[in-house]
Amino acid sequence: MIGRDAPEPPEARGLRRDEVRLLVSRRDTGEITHHTFADLPRILSPGDLLVVNNSATMPAAVRLDRLAVHFSSRLPSGEWLVELRRRTAVATEPYSGGAPGEWLPMPDGATLRLLDRETPRLWRASLDRDVPSFLRRHGVPIRYSYVKRDWPLSDYQTVFGVVPGSAEMPSAGRPFTPELVTALVSRGISVAPVTLHTGVASPEKDEPPYPERFSVSAQTARLAALTRESGGRVIAVGTTVVRALETAALGRTDGWTSHIVTPAEGVRAVDGLITGLHEPQSSHLMMLTAITGPELLSRSYEAALREGYLWHEFGDTHLIV
Image (cartoon, rainbow, N blue to C red; front, side, top):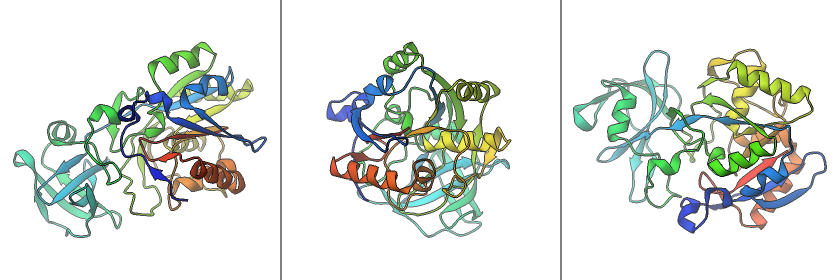
């Protein structure tokens, strides 16, 4: 189930953001159809609600001589989770080195001290500077080897991103443009925000999601409830939004969520999902299976592979409804 990687933003291929392809999988009929993302207002119905992630992407990668440090998430203690990666001619690759107490010299005379491993891949670490300010001066967007060159931070932002904090772009929202949002609202489709700051998601590892900071406002929770009571559908724009809404459905509306959506548990708060296309080992596929069931998801990915859809943050999209 490995598809073709999107090596660059669609704009570099002569497309608008909303001209990427959109695969639509319908749970009620099992039908699978092909569209462009700009068709979304005609596919959704008046009374539906799109819930989007308003987290903005940080320039979270700091490149050293031989290593890169990917800043992932700020912990309640003020420490940060970071991933160390070895720099290569193309991008970076996993680096298994490092030791508790080791310090790394950073740009501008800063020092990063490794404290302890949080996961096999991530370190708890402390920088002797304010991290967001430091990243604004010395960071670049995280880039993996399937993207062949650097692109500016603006290419890693969505139209909804107003609260900085994500290590990697909440990419399901990338194809939206102001014009498309206007068309959706004009058709009677509402848009409401949540915040979930995404951590790093190294493509080489098969790991469950770790805790991430989130917030679901009372207004968004109320609008989602009213939408469902009125017969509309709550459509999550991205797996991050599903995680936030499903955590809120369990009674917690802010702080840190470690909730993992699985087929056994299913979903309580969402009726559909806009997402990208994920590798077969991705934990996101558990969430998609919880929404679609395994048979429809399998047929959807077979269709995406057959039709040459593009994977990853600059690739095509998938609507499950």
